[in-house]
Image (cartoon, rainbow, N blue to C red; front, side):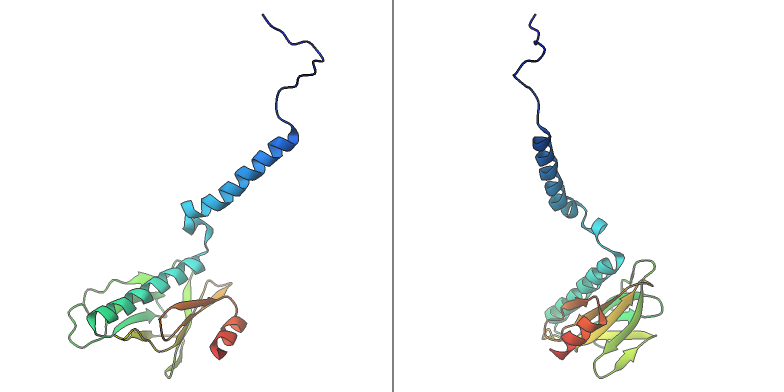
Length: 174
């Protein structure tokens, strides 16, 4: 039966440096993989709401372009809800509209639609035209502590998310 002699020069095991390198590599891998496994876990409700609004706008724009008729994203400022619907008179899909709500604790602070002004209450509809255009608009959502300003770009109906009002004013100058 082999035994090791006390004070043997052959050492078995890992050095502290080797262990620290392995832990650092595992940490880096987890930092890159974990956000992809559950993307909403690492986002705030404000970011998630901006993403969902962007998706609704993209859907309204696509439907307008495919149908050849204008579609709208209607926001109910007081109820913190929104939906998309065709805007053409006599459209068959006007009654079965699916409504969406902002996450709990979030609300529309105001919505500014070009040439119609800034709205703090009521229903505001952003129009998406068949050629893929929409009038410029800004949607402000807040959670009580922070706000996001969502600028709707007129030519592609994409959202630009601004975290400060200064960023928004600079973008509007462009």
